[in-house]
Amino acid sequence: MSVVLRHAESDAEIALCFPVMRALRPDLASAADFIAYVGRQRPFGYRLLAVWKDMAPVALAGYRRQENLVHGSHLFVDDLVTAEGERGKRLGAQLLEAIAAEARTLRCRKVVLGTALANSLAQRFYYRQGMLATGLSFSLTLD
Image 1 (tube, rainbow, N blue to C red):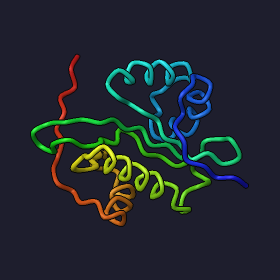
Image 2: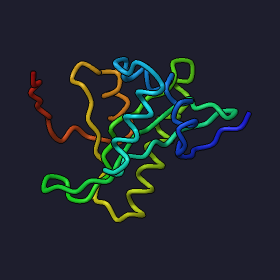
Image 3: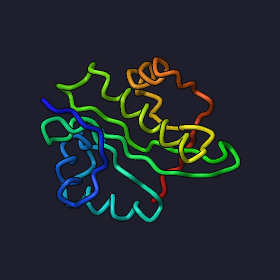
């Protein structure tokens, strides 16, 4: 069984990632919607790194390079998800390690990610990976 980390680049590869991403983003209605989302985010540097097991994605990290006054130059992780049956196999940790390595190569100061306050299982995982809670995000839903 072959396990490889590589970016999903083509629409066909992104479509293969849809079932895994939908576990994290249930509002995505279809693979076509997901492909469109990725296409809209690409101009802002969004990339989709996947753990491929026997040519099928089983874990994903969507991220982008950003710079702001809070964090300086950093890689921001928008999405991090592992397929239900693949959890507990260090796949999320491998994705974060790969993103951290890329951040170092790009001379970024940090890897930053956001998570919902109610997502306590993910927060425990992030702490185990050496990440610390350094802020709190606020949002305003607009009509």
